[in-house]
Image 1 (cartoon, rainbow, N blue to C red):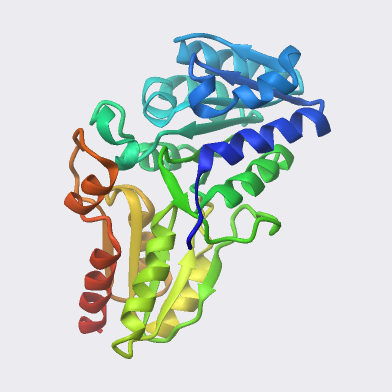
Image 2 (cartoon, one colour):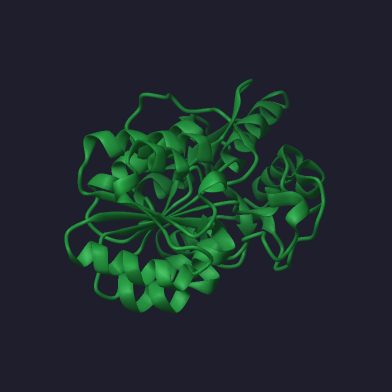
Length: 312
């Protein structure tokens, strides 16, 4: 995990390839094309790029119209604007009619850093996964974002994909296809299951390595699709290890931890510990320092794993 690449860089790279390969694709942005990297598509295919300015609700409305006419629309802005400011438009104009709009948001999570609470989307997974018909993705790294973007172009229906701002560790194979709705076991284990999404998946791998030094065998699951959740892989792992830890750069309320808790409660009730922000807003600061302050580190996952094992 020596390489660190911003996820949005490979989102832009995937869009540029789609500009060449798929004439159905239209890309939209709300005055942030340089930050979201949709500018890569704009350079490759300006005639299918729509800049709406600081008018996110209008972007979703226009996107729904384009999708209704047969286009595959990627609409991008920062996560806090994409999900909070546009929620009603997404609900009624995209999710309800099940239109082919992909809402791909960057700058999610506490690692937005110095921009502070107003720009740190810690609730976006919760907001989006409540919507019927909505697929919700949180890829682990830049390479997985690239493959997920390609998969979204082929998927017929509404979807939300979240990406961070900071450089993320690279842990996946650049050429491995992305399958919506399928989790992947990255490391086999028998004592505890560590389920991660986003950059926290890399921290789960690191936590498993720390635990191994003490003779604890941790299984690591990359749950990059939050909805539909891969309950089969989750329960298969949890039934083997007997306890579970979730890790996300998002509130534990309504996010990955809640989704996993719901699935386990229904079919495989085992001790569960959740690592994420604890029902709080963020604050301005350096990303790495905020991750420590808000409990989003390898060490916090290790501690949670020990607690979960003790509860078995």
